Length: 113
Length: 113
Image (tube, rainbow over all chains, first blue to last red; front, side, top):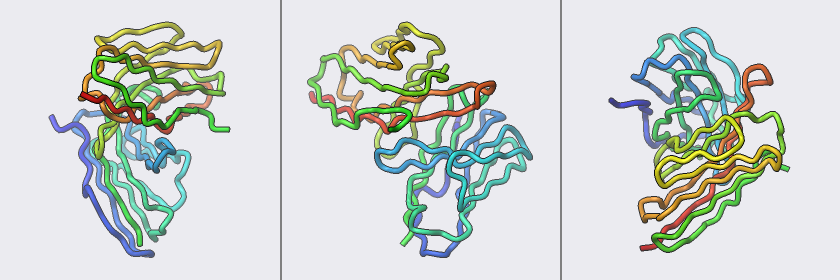
């Protein structure tokens, strides 16, 4: 049982480039989330989804986009990479809503130079 | 002032000692309280989940919630080197009150053999 799988694990981008961070879960969870984690700052919610076709902004959505076409997949897209987006990105899923226990992937470490 | 305060550490203890971790918060609307453990270069994993004030025990782990003092704690008994990790507290306001999840910045714990 893989749980939440994120790809790639590491990536270096140049300023202005775009990329998609992939996230897949095999637990049939309706709720999925994207966070960024900066040193000492805690996890910040970027976007979340309550089911296929439904997404909503979190605390720090600027510069990112998401889509949810299936229950399993929740990709995060960076359109014009900026140095401020250098961070570790985590995808998570839960059976219930935001306040329920979440299962996390192992993250994508992204550097923008 | 941050909504959730957590000492970043590192907290260094000898093997077998009790580890005591704390978070304070300012938002009295928080209803759900969680502790996550995060190993280096891995995603957070849920350790403890509580809804009300009081104590909850699970093996070597005890979580305490004191809503009147806006203070939560995690105790790890008989600590092992495998407990060396970063511990994140998280607090959540339910859907009816705004649906918001806030993480602390994490406390790094080192258990020395």
